[in-house]
Image 1 (cartoon, rainbow, N blue to C red):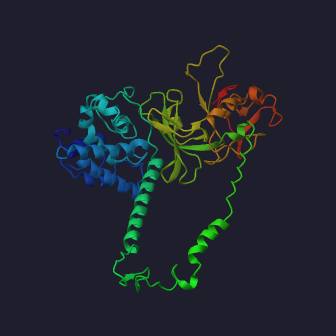
Image 2: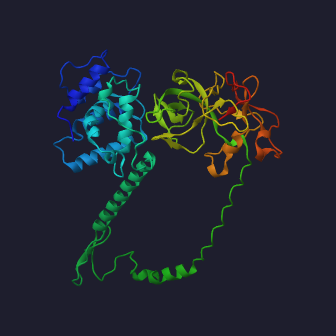
Image 3: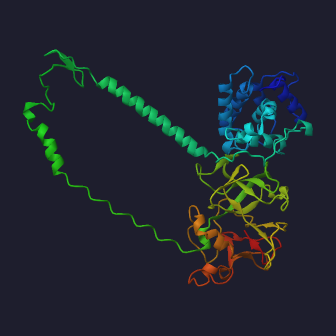
Amino acid sequence: MASSIPSDSRCIAILRKSFAQNHLPTQDHYPLSELSRIPLYNDAHYDDADKSVIQEHLTTSQHICSPNEDKAKTNERLATLNTHLASRTTLLGSKPSVADVAMYARLAPVLQSWTAEERTGETGYHYIVRWFDFVQRSEMMGLKLDNNELINIDPDDVKVQIKPVDAKAEKERKKKEKEAAAAAQAAAGNASTNGVPVRQGKGEPVANAVGASIPVGQPSEGTVSDTKAGQGTSAAPEQKRAKKEKQPKPQKQAAPEKPLSPALIDLRVGHILKAERHPNADSLYVSTIAVGDATGTENTSEYDGKVVRTVCSGLNGLVPLEEMQGRKVVAVCNLKPVTMRGIKSCAMVLAASPRLKEGEEDHHKGPVELVDPPATSGAGERVLFEGWEGEPEAQLNPKKKVWDYCQMGFTTTDDGSVAFEKAAVEQLKEAQYGANGPAMLKTKEGVCKVKTLKGATVR
């Protein structure tokens, strides 16, 4: 499976070609485990945990798919790597590292030899293939490869679609398995230490629970056969009969359903820390956005010391990539996450586009303008339509169509302010609550706006 060219030589060649400005080793053969000392990505900051993961994968890259390794071990390593990459863009999650380059160099000849079935078939390595194509083509990775060096990967040629691996669920499953194994081991240990064998000879001693020796047939003080506690054996059935029958617990009443309102939508100020092109879709960007989530929140990760969400948006070709970097946006944070061409998107960025006229088709040609919160607003700050205050749902139920109905009322005024028009939502026309006129979208710092579009659709 492996090429005759040593992986360390291939890796060094790629590094020299792509990172000429860095202090790279001059020899062709260089221990891959030492590469972690070379600073390739100056904008990436690695903590001790990151460095440990980098070292681990540098070591793996020396052994994975080795011709000296049996097939079972190779398949095990590939399966482990595939699972690791299921919820990650790079080996570290979202940061580039030399480990990605080393692993790429190792797997390039291997992946090139795979059939389409081996790549994305029922037992294929879908996530390795997706990661591999990202490494060789992404600007973030910075590899300078000639066209003849690129491995041809067709993102549409997927033989079997697979359900994305939920990394947290997988971690929880493994944790439960370990706990169950530990409990079984403890139970076995208790049985072997407490279950003392009784010898059948009359009057021969046997150890009790505290290590004393008593002759069989001679009750010890305090046992159920103690003659002083004569009723001990008959008391238990009496107690059981005395117990009252359990009454069925009263059913909890379902919480009353909240009335339809744009306040049910969790709108927050988001800060885009980085944005890049989606490796598998020409129309998408992949953004790393801080929206004020607490550490450990589901569907989040960590980037540069901040809790972030990964968000895919169909803005490639409509908003220049450089305009996405480092900017503040308004994010919808309680839609159900969706996987878009292999990457799980866990929020949505609000943007405005011209409202279609009756009978007009949307060809997604733009123009498109992102909704700007006030510049002084902080990431995670709640954004509300004035006169529509309330607590948002933890996650919107797609069947109730809260987003679909309310979004029909999202628009922009003549000065570019984003507003909610109750009258535009059929399900709210007769409602006796909420603001009746245009309700401005606001943070505590002020109104959210777009640059130029008036009477636009916002979604």
